[in-house]
Image 1 (cartoon, chains in turn yellow, orange):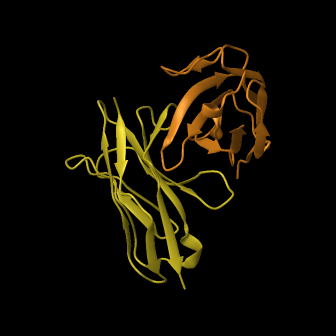
Image 2 (cartoon, rainbow over the protein chains, first blue to last red; image 1 turned 180 degrees about the vertical axis):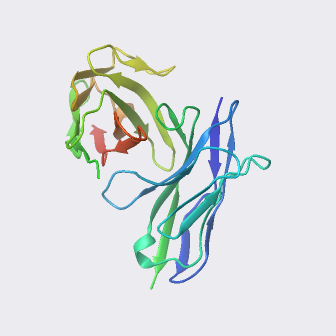
Length: 113
Length: 116
């Protein structure tokens, strides 16, 4: 079945450092790919998404590119802030996000001032 | 943005009792809601898909008689854990799917269930 593997945390960075959280997937079809973020005490929020190969999703300075050849969707940000501290989940859906989401285990990011 | 609430946020119950968790879409209508379960340091696992006015669709391995789902209106779905046992202790998260636009799923903040 479909699955998502993302790098285990926790990840601790200093403010303004470069962030990469790796995510790879296994899917039978051509899934849509997502990054969700969960801030403390809140529900998951969609951070960005990409629906086909070579698409780049971006939001709030975060980016991820849908790489079909490497089945990857790595999350990057050039300069993290303390407010980026949260848990990040990579996910896929075979039907554009309206149906079943398959999640990775989540990566906790802590950014220190 | 679209907001989904869950109630209660935390609940502690004794083994053998039943617990009901509510999931509400506050500012939009949702014909479809999803219930997930999350174990510590694990990913969210879909338990069931709840459709307004019809029976829920359960994922393989999820006991439908233990986890009762009711989606009686376009803004409310409930999950009842019947005859709870300590192994049911977990973090339960719901999401509601928008009926318009990108049909995105919006997530609630989750409910921490502890069965003693």
